[in-house]
Length: 131
Image (tube, rainbow, N blue to C red; front, side, top):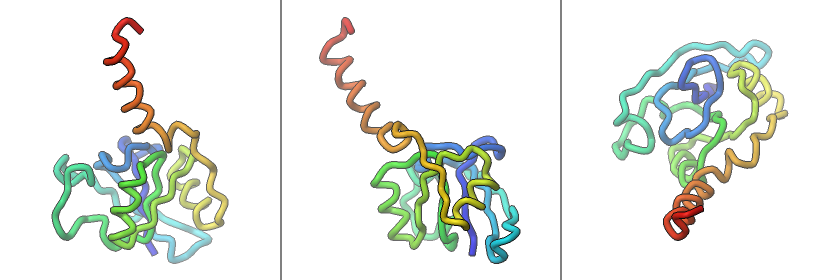
């Protein structure tokens, strides 16, 4: 089994999974010792926000861990057979270990609602420019 982790800096779990282009790939075949097996640094057109083609480099992973993603992204990944796991852990290896153990650290509420809040705030600022 393989798990991908969104990590724009290759050091921490990052959010905005749909726009992410950098991923750490872990092999979790041996649950006691998950290990990093690959790093993907994809061009912008390969982010899921931009990608609308067939085969993607993440096809074949079992799960994608991220600090935040929208429902539409999760639905697109489910169609590809990839489980999206939103977590609050910043260390990628620890996040993968938590996933294996079924003890995911919850992400802050804004990680789930960020996109909606951003749209609402943007709309509110246009309706009330003085605020």
